[in-house]
Length: 238
Image 1: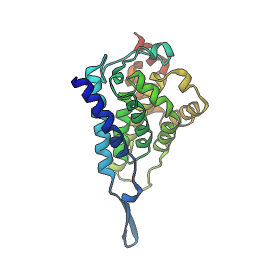
Image 2: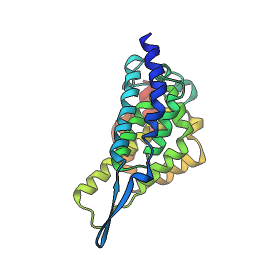
Image 3: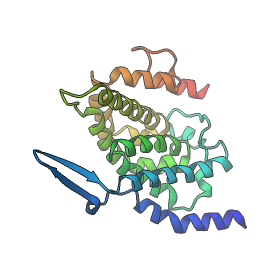
Image 4: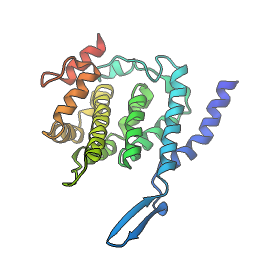
């Protein structure tokens, strides 16, 4: 059938696609510009395209599955409610969710453009039970990469464009963090490493306000310090 042929084709092609999401050091060169050195990443555009392709494939499965990759799904992070998530990735090859999760773990620590694509991909994949399970296996690596993103310090002479780009990246990252906290089973997120990530990084003075805004946007109601992840979970159940 057409569906089986598509699944077999993706099973053959996806390992090649995932291989293109990894940074290739041999394509990175340093150009000497007198007193300055400029790093040129010859593989960046390929990695960006690879992540976009992965997102397209995930969307393709979501458009034919129950709930879809873009639908609202209930859940407060408990095992029982995670089991009610969409299984649209069930139509994908068995190895596909793990491949996506590994790509996300790598992309979360890549270049700005790749990080933005990775955060969006993460939010999509978390709407699948199989996707959430695969991401949970890579949670430590993902949180470590996100820590670097959220704690990165701007240069003292940074221009407005650089500051705005960094703010966009932080918001994108925090939106994905909220997704992780809501959609993954609690036995996965209630670990010492992830708890430290939330407490010391996400709820730090530097980004806590933006985190609360991301929580509110996810369905927790109005902004401000009163917005909690518990409120978001209640909203998703209602």
